Image 1: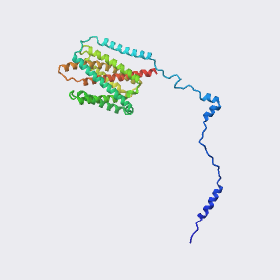
Image 2: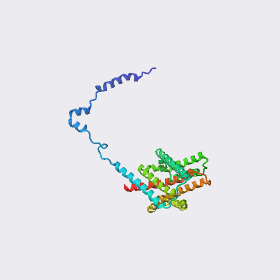
Image 3: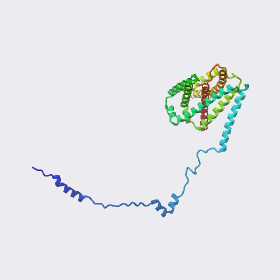
Image 4: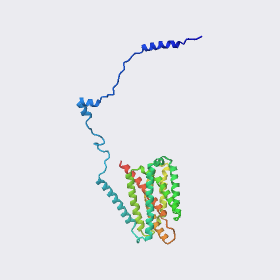
Length: 332
């Protein structure tokens, strides 16, 4: 027996009911024409055009700058004062520390000293370029956010290992010796890369002062009487030990504000005095080794001699950067 499908019969009725109950709205045609409101207001109201279409002052062009750059005359005055300070330091050091001079350097001494300073300058240039590239790549941020003890341990192991390799590799093994020398400069660059957080003005001034101090002390050491400053080896070693301990004391000891100030002063100003003495000592040691190499007692090794001078200059530079940054902070 067939069952009629009621849904089939009810569908036409439902369609008719809903179609009759649905309201019919008139359709509205939208045109693509859009009137320019600003143009219309500009034509109708002259006050509107005078208010909104008149050029006004901007902060970028007419306002007074927050920080005024020094004029060219002021900049030259600062350069002159800096140059006079460096020249005065050279003269003062030469007067007080170099009262007894020696004869002119022999060709062997002059050549050996020049070769040592060439490697020193080349190593410092490589260190600066590598530190800058590490800073731009974000390596300095990772160093600053890492554990200070881990950074200290890794930097000491890397620096001391490559330094010993560069110093004690025979000069005949040129490739390996230069590889250790490049590794030593890379380790120094990794340690010094956070210094680029300081202002470039502070870094440039510290570099200029470092060149002046090291240049004057090297001149004194080269022209002083033979073996005058070689006796400073023992006292300087004791002094650098005190400076190192004063630098590490805030990491290990619970010091108060006065204790921190004392250790910071020992690390900064005591370090300047100690490493300035090391420049005198290393310069005369280079001349002594030049005479010994000429006599055939040792093998000439300018790379080994340059490492000591490079460490002296780096330590002096770091302390000058800290001192200049502290002075700049007090001015603010």
